[in-house]
Image 1 (cartoon, rainbow, N blue to C red):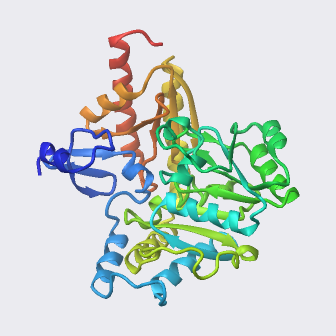
Image 2: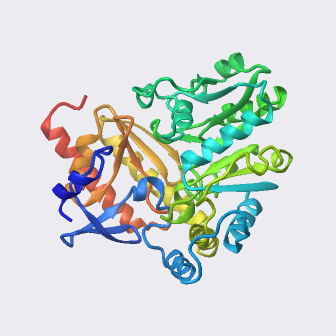
Length: 394
């Protein structure tokens, strides 16, 4: 289908790049004209293993020949196996499956509200992002995502990321939960500091509130740990995940500590397609591939290598303000808008993303190699030089 016909029939809710992707393998994708691109932002963070990882493809192919959908009033083995793997690699508890990160966060919100109806407020962070449903978008601490959707549900307050004193001043016994990402993704790749994380954990304990960590983007190996909270000496009470859990197949989930597992009872929450055998088989394959192929170690090593290369660029170009992030979730903040850099890279067959207007977001597959990193760094530097030739640095 040509792009003009596509635009006639598909609702225009995205700013699309003028390429049609038809094939992917690893860190490479191809468009409908046979041109190859190096994808350093696969699936908006959903492609931690790259495109069409062989173990995921095999698991999905096998499952669709057996059964595709099982209603959740019956047991299905793939769902149980994936839940077991998640709990064995996090904390003692149980898992609820859904279809997206927004749904996972919605479920977490419902759980903490139902736990104690007298506690009506959830504190999230300014510049956060938690999804596009009406409650998740309200939890999102960016007014641009709220515009036009009034009336928004009540019960959310917003704290500045890493502002410990502000968090302390907002916390009281009426707070149901604190909810935030260990690294703000759409907010510009802003890592939460150890002090803020530890303070949040203690404040929740002191005020009988739950700590919800949104690892929809940071989870499944992205930072060199299976989940980013594992860089800290804490555990959340609720952990949400999605994106790369299915290796490209839609899936979402939240894990709940054992003592809170009886809050959502039969009939209080559900999902028709949540935990379906195809998605869960893909999830099992993803987690096994990460373990079998030592991809957490690779994410750490390649994250260090990529950051070293980005830091080297920063010493050369004053338009680069800061490099930040953990593992293979890195952001390069510029003193100028990043859209032109992204477009130059697209012309050079490298796919990147710009978030928060000035932050180039680099989140390659966690099985990326030094060779691919070197190629991307070369293209980014060429884009910077081209931008400098067009005008002033700031």
